[in-house]
Length: 426
Ligand SMILES: *Cc1c(COP(=O)(O)O)cnc(C)c1O
Image (cartoon, rainbow, N blue to C red; front, side, top):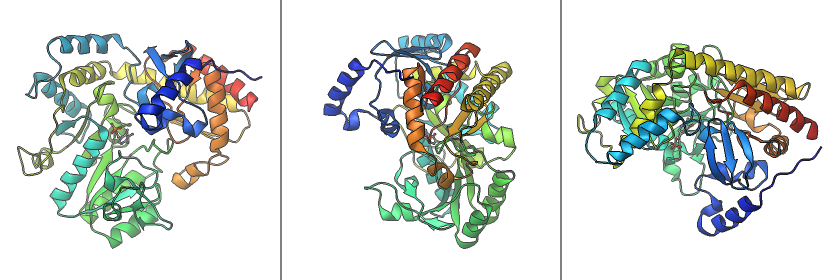
C-alpha cells in the first residue's frame, strides 16, 4: 500500500532555504539527501513527538541526534533554562552553575576529575587533541575508519586502502598535511592496531568506544582493552570520544560500562541538554595543562554558557538509576520489535542502552567497510515509507536511532506497526 506525505509547506520552505543556506540546511544530514527526499521543516516538538509545518506528527527517533535523552520540551529543562535566561543569557564571567555541572560530570564519569567546557563536540575533540599533543610532545593520531569526531581538519581524514593507512583529506579544503598526521585503521581490527602502534609514535589513540556514526558498531570482545594497552605501551594518550555514548549507554558512559578508562574524554550532546555545550576532561594533572592553569591555550566566548549549563544540569538530574532502566527497556522493546517487523528480510538490528541501528545487510556489521556495503537504497525507501506513516527515523543508514525517556511503550508499538507496513511496502 502506498501512503504519501503532505509536504507542500516544507517544499516551499526548502525552496526559500536553498536561496540563502547551502543545501538549504545548517548541517548536511538534515537535508535528507541520503534517503532521497527533501527535508521536512519542523514547527515544534513535545516529548517524543515532532510536528512539521504541514501539520504531520511523527514519533521522533532522532531527538536532535542525541542531546534530548529526556525528550523534547522537557518541563524541568524548560524551567531551568527559563529561570537562567531571566538572570541574563551570558556574562563572560564565572558562574556557580559551571562548577555544579563539572562536579556532577566528574561524579559520573570515572576518568574525569576536571573538565573544560566548549560550545560544540567538534571544539571539544579538537581541544582534547591539542592537549594530547602538548602532553606527549608528539603529533600523530590514530583513529578508526567510520568514526566521527567533528569536522576539525585533522579528524576529517579518510582511510586509503590497506590495514593501517595514512589519512587523506576527507573534504576539499583539508590540508594534506593535517590529514597525513592521522593514521586510520579499521574498527575492531586488533592486528591493524598492533601494526600501527609498532610503526608510529602517537600523541593519541582516538576512539568512539561505542561508535554510532557508521550506525552502531559495538567494540568486539577485548578490543577496548587492547586499545588501552596499546596506548600505554606506545606512550600515547587514550582519548574516548563519548559525545554520543556519554550519559547514555550508562550513567558514566562506555568507560563505566566496560571498565576501560581513557586518559581524556570528549563529551557533548546530552551534557548540554539540547543547548550548545560540550566538554573535554581527564585527570587533574593533564587538565591543569590547560590555560590559565597551564600553557595549552584554549578559550571560548560562550563556553560554560549559563543557559546551556542549566539545561545540562536539569538533564543529568533526571538521569538516575531508574531512568537508565527505563531507557534500556525502551531500547530493547524497539530493537526486538524491529527484528520482528523485519521478519526474514536480510537486516541486522544492533542495540545498546539508548542506541539502535537497523542495517540493511545480510551479515553482521563489524567495521565501516561492512556498514558501507549496506543496501542504502532500500534503507532510504524504508525511511520514506516510515515518514509517510508518522515515524521519523534517522535519515541516514550511518546514524543511530536515539530512544529517549519520553518514548512510551505506545510510541514503540506505533513505530513497530509502521516499520512492518514500511517493510511490506518495499
Ligand atoms: C556529534 C559528534 C561530535 C561533534 O559534536 P558537534 O557538537 O556536532 O560538533 C563529535 N563526536 C561524536 C562521536 C559525535 O557524535
